[in-house]
Image (cartoon, one colour):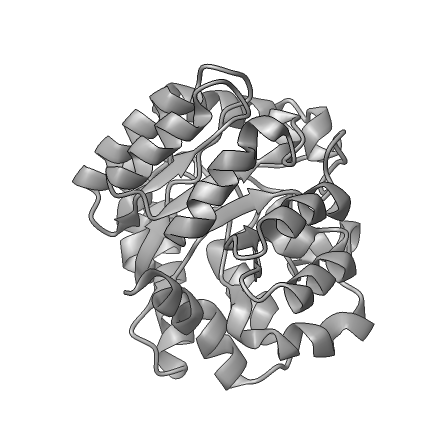
Length: 311
């Protein structure tokens, strides 16, 4: 277990600033050694501050959706500090993964995300959805306003992604070629509609939908690798996978590593920043120690997402 999991980041001070500066140097050394111009992180969270504070409070309370785990937030900083830190790390582009847990939230979140993207040019304009009347309309409006990626969270939203209310919206996104980062695996705790079967029904109807399965589909890794092997537009993000934290709880099966290597052009770097219980650089080192080679790392940490988003 990574020792950083046990001690949440301090709230401020010179020691923390020094630590962050040192970490930024480590992150830059990582991608510099690979000959990259920086990183592209497709799974970072920015949302209205009062919403984010509620998310942090949920993690602090060790709720059921965290699997009852202690989950200290390493980067519990103000929004401007968080964006500045990603830039210090050399993250060329990142996302504002935000998501509703009930009807009536998504349009408001999309309005906030559009404004955030306007004032944060290195953030890929992110939007979200929920199975409710009018979803196709507000998603179309978000796409027309420049949204480049959507976030869907089956676990938190507690909805079936194959709900008929979403069918036309999935079709719209498939036609537009807009990637959707979707938390549909059953980690860290299963939900009523998590797992590969519901999302397989969506893909059967919309095989060209550009789904990016968050967390490599943790813990149903092999089943989601199978979906990526079957559908050419399905991708996976690395968020939290292979870290000491995840490996102790939901380890990736070693027998599946050759399949992951074989999908090297469709695996994207994700981190869950700022809501992670360890330093950002640990995710990078966790990928490096897989031993899949520098070409795989370059593709995962930058090139695949740069191609997907035309960066």
